[in-house]
Amino acid sequence: MSLFSSASRLRRIAISALLLASCALGGCSSIDRLSQIGEQPKLSAIDNPTTQPGYKPVQMPMPKPEVASYNPNSLWRNGSRAFFKDQRATHVGDLLTVTVNITDKANIANETQRSRTAKEDSGITDFIGSQTVTQPLKILPGRLLTTDSTSSADGKGSVNRTEALQTNVAAVVTQVLPNGNLVVEGKQEIRVNYEIRELIVAGIVRPEDIQSDNTIDSSKIAQARIAYGGRGQIMDVQQPRYGQQVMDVLLPF
Image 1 (cartoon, rainbow, N blue to C red):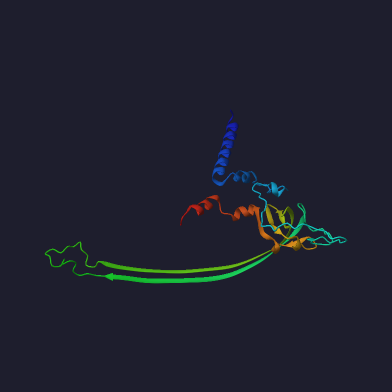
Image 2: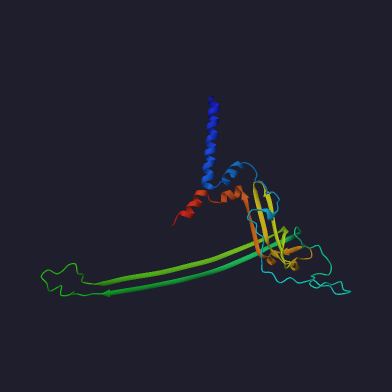
């Protein structure tokens, strides 16, 4: 066996050991991250949200179903929501545009102060005639009870937060509830150089809240789940290393 083949074999063994150690310490996802060094992050494949692991259909309290009835010589049906059919999302698989408009501002400040001082002093100079004997009992104290305690607390807290997010994302209807409400979910990925920005929107909407241009504001989405973030080289730098995260969880002080 040549020297070069031995060195190559040792290199493969070292890389394998490094990958196994990385999998054991930082999770097996580290292997995928190591394999993507120098490569652009890959976009996720377009798939059916209902087939993803952990997907659960939404179950909400529903009113009793209303039986549709037609009147003679009338074009209107009882329980109908519109006279003319429009192109707004109504069925599973239909698309609608969600306008994400979040402007959140909070400014809270509070302070609590508390202090207490207590002192107890009880003294006996002659305990059961201890001073009258020839050799006083030294083990008997001259003062039976003397306690001092002082406690104080000063707590201050403040919150000053301002958040603003304005963007649009197309969502797909994944479920129609018995009362006609729609369960929607949308995901958008944008890759700029070596960084991917993700926008995820999910929730329940009423068909009446969908505008004529097939758009709906995020403030009208019930059980809304909106996530805006990213992944890539910049996110790796912003996140603490695995060792720091483990120490933050384990250290009690």
